[in-house]
Amino acid sequence: MTAEEILKYGLENLAGTILVESWGEKGIFYNQTMCESVAFIY
Image 1 (tube, helix red, strand yellow):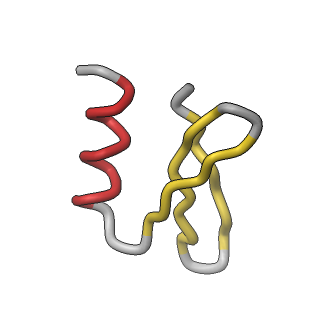
Image 2: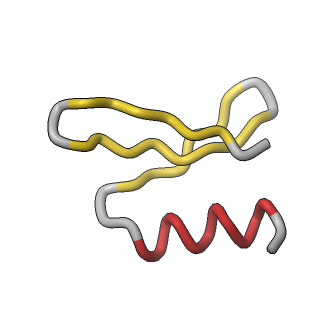
Image 3: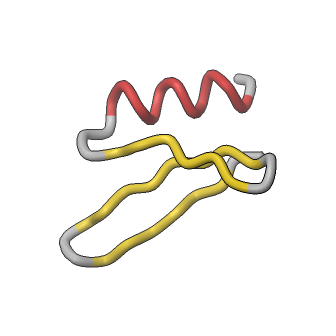
């Protein structure tokens, strides 16, 4: 699975996720019951 496929899967299947792009990196932001987490893929 490529990084793009992982991002696409997460965005399509995890409710409440958004794509975050910063400083040339892409990741998924997920606000989970008042606990913010960011997972950068690349």
